[in-house]
Length: 161
Image (cartoon, rainbow, N blue to C red; front, side, top):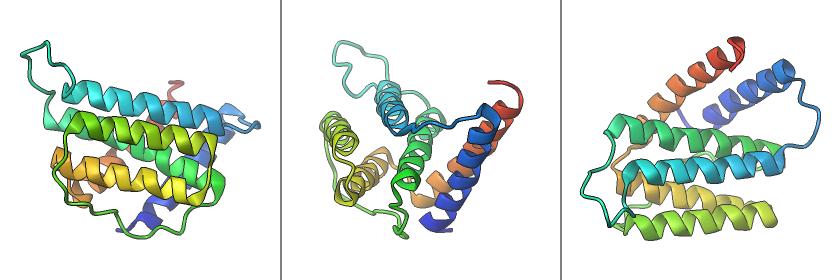
């Protein structure tokens, strides 16, 4: 499976949500803010910035689920702007401090929301590739979790989430 297949799955989910929720307005900023929130939730589960606490990170599965919540919104934002030509997962194998990586990613997202160019969009993907590597996730991990969460999102829409 490549990113094109994820874009297709995300388009189908977005179309379903738009029909179910009768969305007719531009929701770019809402999706951008949602991505920022999901990134913050991911950071919270890693606990990488909580220097005052001795409690460790959440379970790997919890962190992976938070990670793929972001992937849904990254794909969705790309669909909104027509930036869907990316085919390969951004593999960036560089050991980095997680706190710095989260801050860099947050900055990339905000830059994209304010200036939604394809280059800024690609920067978000690169940041998420770097996050995946530093969190120990492979593309296969991400795809498997994405597929599970995608189905859960359909179920949530059907049950009035």
